[in-house]
Image (tube, rainbow, N blue to C red):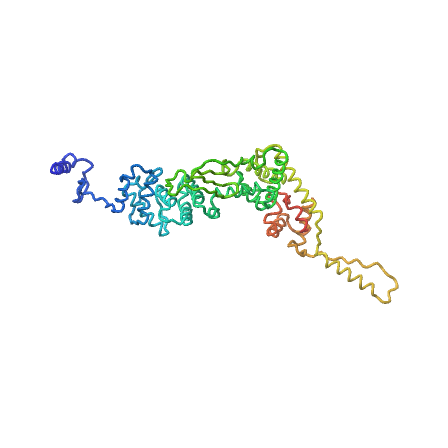
Length: 493
């Protein structure tokens, strides 16, 4: 001990050190700059944690697996709580209790105590992994449904902190549902299950409704068409076209190809040996079981004496690029047909697919043309004039002593300033009619003592609620009717 004191004294009273920049012009308190190890206080480790760590050195632990040790230590500590401020961060792969030092263990158990109170503070990623292992191994609660809900909550709160963590938590959520044979509806919001549900709608396209089929296309398409400018402006037309094209393509592949359309896009399901809770620390505490479990008709599991097999689509379970190219080609061709302002590059699809899309779009255009031709429209605004003329004719017919029937006087009904059901006045209707029929719109404006730009702006304002868009383009010196609205604008003149 005297040797240590002599060394400290020599360091603290060295004249060269005292005259150096490290010491010069500084004021120090009476606290020693260098402390003995005995003077440095370290947090005391709770006895419970010491006992838990000692389990790793029992004779049984030498021949048992690491998963057994984790499960044994976890059950020993499942009711333990702690209050310890731990703010450090660290990284460990496949962490267990024995991989953490005393401070990290106290930090973990303090964080877990807060989770159980409904709090979800930030934490190092290894803490989240260990908590997931506990839920998988039924540490802390034996209720399978409760463990599943806690695992889903853990994913929601901490999954975004690390992509690999999020992927594994979602996989283990599905595995826990299978292992405990829970209701598949409990994991209906897990992406893997949502993928299966959407794919089933495409596989059963003949029984699926148009709405179900479109939602499935939207969920699985690699082309995000709902963000397309054309889709935003013409959603109902695009939805109808997407569904019709997919049905037509499915018909064609069924009748003229060896493989169905969905198999061409997604491959076919396969049964393979699998291992539940892969990449997790999981201790199989149950005796080997034999049972079958179905998440969906295209995603099933079998367990035979502890050997697991899974039947499912093993290809990419992300958004499908081939399906996305088909949706993109529909978008491209619909823009070209309508001369949409914003253009799009054509997608990479086969000539057969492009021809099928064009055929369906032609069929839709023909149906709209026939519907328009069959539509009967009654202009209620002219009924008043007809009634007035009929009243005049009636009065002339009932004159008692009339000897000569003269031709009825023509009654010129003054055009009302604003048609019934139309928000436009006479000047605006005359100007719009000239634009639609290719007439002299400038003269029409002058006839009413107005300017073309003012009339165009007024019409756009009055019809905005009906069309949710401007109907006359005034960006150049010559006003032009937006072609998409030309037919419907005829009802306002």
